[in-house]
Image (cartoon, rainbow, N blue to C red):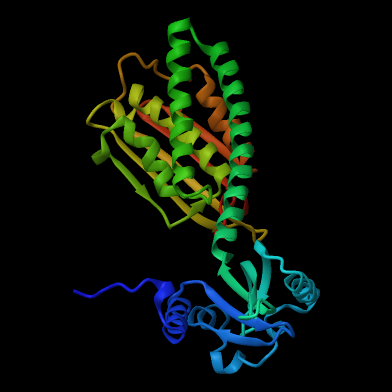
Length: 340
């Protein structure tokens, strides 16, 4: 069985070799330098982090790693090291051999001679570029979420107000408000899953139609288009209102109906690229549908003809007939998607 020799009982040569092995196998860049800022040691992790080999850096000034605007940092570091100070974990920028700037966390400590004199410094560097980018994205995402949540509060208040005007009683009001808030929640889930970068139009349509069932009667067709968060929210509202009406009175109220949702990118006479979306359904007319009459305009009609198209700077038409519903939206592609 191998005997473990305590570190302090090792010979000086063994101790040096032991320390060298620890430094060389470290995942952090460990660099030694003298009081003139000349590199005296350079481990493998330093090679990987900065791009220079040990042969290229040992004997060279450590200022090769410092961007021009930050050169004064080294003067301050050496001054503090000479006073015996230890610089613990501060963040700064360093430069790789290829000129790329990286964010690093540095810890710098004095190196003492056997006589107790300060002869240099040991620097431990850790690349925090990815961590800082992740932190930046989280902050950006939180600001975006805060903005979107405030927008949703405004939408919900408007929705509650308009629904209350058009509900026959409190039971109907509660049911409609609950369904509409759940629809907003589905759009919110889609955006959260994409980190608020947007969601494909196909996923938005599919996600809002799934609760109504009758999947075999539904056809979704169109090119891959990634909607901006604003378009996800308002098209989601439109699909919910259309789907609710269809489940009560139209194609999704029986096994005989057919529903198609088609979209495409078109170019108008002025050269503007537009998103053109058409919802069209056919069904067996229900007995309670009054022939030749237009259904009472509710909040759904307001969403389809005014709220959704205006939010996307577009125009929409809604046609209702016996056994037939057609909603067409035309909106500038630039206001709906990042695919422009």
